[in-house]
Length: 135
Image (cartoon, rainbow, N blue to C red; front, side, top):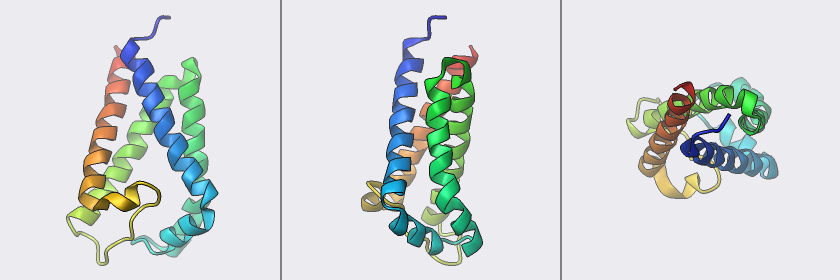
């Protein structure tokens, strides 16, 4: 099977995204956990997400690296990016009772509006990967 060149590029971009996201959480676990405890969802959910989110992101990298599971990795990337985008959109459009704190890493420096724009672009990239792989 000769993958479409764009699939290779999209796979590489998503791997870089999830590697950055997971390693920044793992190497700053205390800060990440603190950030999750201040979000709009219940604290018990933040405790669970402290460990499951970075592990899920690492698992997505594994799925994307293996050609036989790449499509599942694309779908999972699309799903997670959609969830993240909706969450950030909630902050931008102020649908929460309180304003959640910013994400870690580069995203904490860009503000909610830019974060939403970046998330939308990354979601579209993941969608493009799914569509190209399904052709």
